[in-house]
Image (cartoon, rainbow, N blue to C red; front, side, top):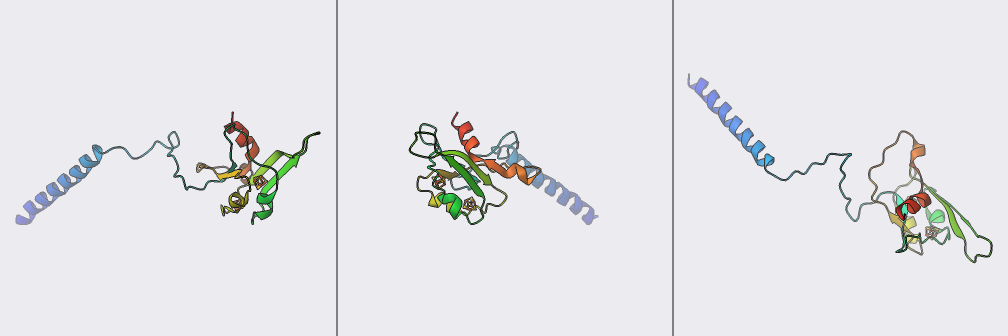
Length: 146
Ligand code: SF4
Ligand code: SF4
């Protein structure tokens, strides 16, 4: 008979402990997010794929020197510049990143002489084919500066 009451006691105690934990979490601030409708801001040191940085006027800072392309150990950068008639400098007309090959080593960002490259905070990448990870960084930069 004493075993019977002990089981009731243990069951009641376990129920109260469980309810106590539930109540404690119920009154704490919510820490979960309704992903993908809500997203967390990434930490300053987070490395997403590279992006072209914008200056204060919203223009990119690339001088089409090709250093990033030459130094990338994975060969994932391809860029193109063109010199318009009468202009002294080349203008960037295409900057493509094959993110499927990128190891996020940072060599391109560190070697750029004009600080034209940054790591994006884009962690929200998903796709059905590798093609979706070939990124047009010039287009992305133009959209950001609008
Ligand atoms: S190293 Fe910098 S300036 Fe040179 S091509 Fe790359 S992004 Fe442009
Ligand atoms: S982070 Fe490294 S691997 Fe990725 S594009 Fe830059 S140099 Fe290439």
